[in-house]
Image 1 (cartoon, rainbow, N blue to C red):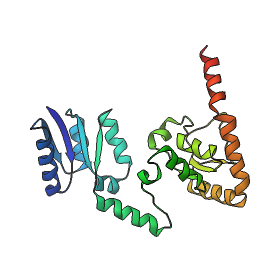
Image 2: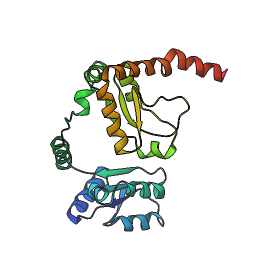
Image 3: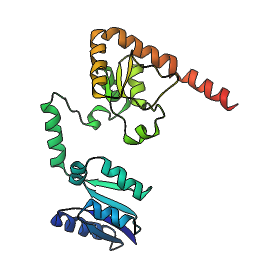
Image 4: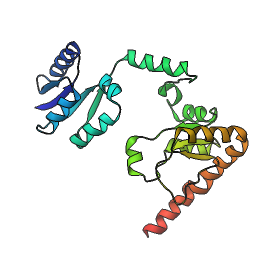
Length: 221
């Protein structure tokens, strides 16, 4: 029997989700429904579940810290945040109203050539890190950022911890505050070509596979 904790404050939606889950596994899923996050946390400290389904609106209302609280109680138990297409459409409209141009991930990266072309036509990268990367503070940097740097495109990314070698300030900018991000964009726009050259230089100096693999092998052997 699979035990699922459903956190949904709309009784009609909760009923539909419960019926769908029970039909999917021929009655092998036991659903426990609560309406409030506080009730969910209370249950999690006293009962064992295999997964949790969480209403997206509850996350939006209480903030992403809610997921951290639940994850702490769950350990490695999977969390599924429920939403619908109307949510996605509203978020897209809100972004576009503020000047963003939104591309679906599949359209931009449905193959190596399409992904490379998308990055090459970009002016640069702006990216925020996941909460887990911020907590570890291990100077994490994404493979996407490396693709931008290798293409000669500057990157403005969230600071994920101190680094003894990772550059910061030309080609690659690591911000900790909104003002820091804005300042990085201003610096890039003032000398865009120089920052493009600096980005490519960072990729060659710090992330060339021939150099990094050699270092790994020397350390290991």
